[in-house]
Image (cartoon, rainbow, N blue to C red):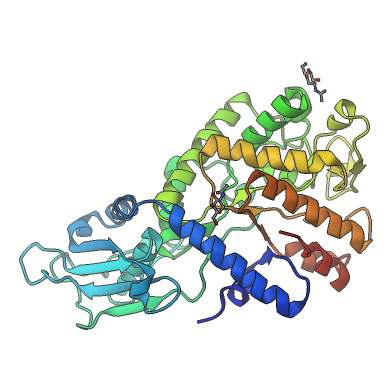
Length: 410
Ligand SMILES: *[C@@H]1O[C@H](CO)[C@@H](O)[C@H](O)[C@H]1NC(C)=O
Ligand SMILES: *[C@@H]1O[C@H](CO)[C@@H](O)[C@H](O)[C@H]1NC(C)=O
């Protein structure tokens, strides 16, 4: 099996301490192992995961609800490290009306990935996004005549600990107007595909509003100029624009927070690791008025209409300013308070299509360190997940700049 770190680096960049290449890979593996242990310990109880998985089956294939039995098993059943699912003929399948197929998995996601695997490879069915056909289940034999697998069963191991899903912009390109019913379908689909590391970005403006208003005295009208409208949040979150398409209606804040709580609860019930957002340094313009000595830089124009400063050129808090870690910490703490738990992985993509104001590797390094300190001071077990888009998009990022943003101390 691949080492967890090399596997993950294919997909995304988890920022870990890099003192030297050799040393870092050991440290990285240790850090990831510790994180996996914490996540295993904090996972929803097996009965809850089974109930959540059974509910997915019921929504997908109600006619076959009693044809499958699901079980959560320990990692030891996978024959070594890592997670897996196991498909067996059900021991009582010879009895009339008894379940036919038994699917065991280390988490609810593994169980459902096993169900999908069985439906795909044993029954010739197809489950995709709604846009590309949705669930095509007509080839599945009726309940009572499901194909049997070999007597020894089938064990499929997960080759990497996490399967990641979404880009930071998906929230606006795709999910902007989704209600719970649509989200539920998507989370079902995620679990069937074995996705266990999805971004969970919904409702973050509600948390930001609490943080900025209650802790930093920023008013609602100042925040109207900071957040984008509902369909443009991905870009205001990343500091590409501000105020465009806004202000957010008052109803949005409560609705989105309520939606996020449902999304998170379902992801946790299925045994997933939802990734929460973290502070990147993007601040409302009004922060300058309240903290006149704060070090704040105005970034350049992204693609705002007519380069109008009403929408363009957001404000970046300098990493060396003590406020940076304080805002970062408060944001993590407020999420913990609101959601009651975390999976300890936080996303923060700095400078997504925004060129950093200073080309000095020392500056980039201090920014990386401040972002991570903000996370760690709110959650001592925080891990930073970053997508690599900025590195391919902007020629600013040459090896020295890329390297230093990864030098983060824990
Ligand atoms: C925020 O407002 C409160 C109450 O009006 C005040 O006591 C506090 O000093 C203010 N904080 C800052 C940083 O301006
Ligand atoms: C961090 O993980 C350690 C175990 O590794 C645990 O004792 C501690 O409570 C965790 N902290 C938080 C905030 O979850």
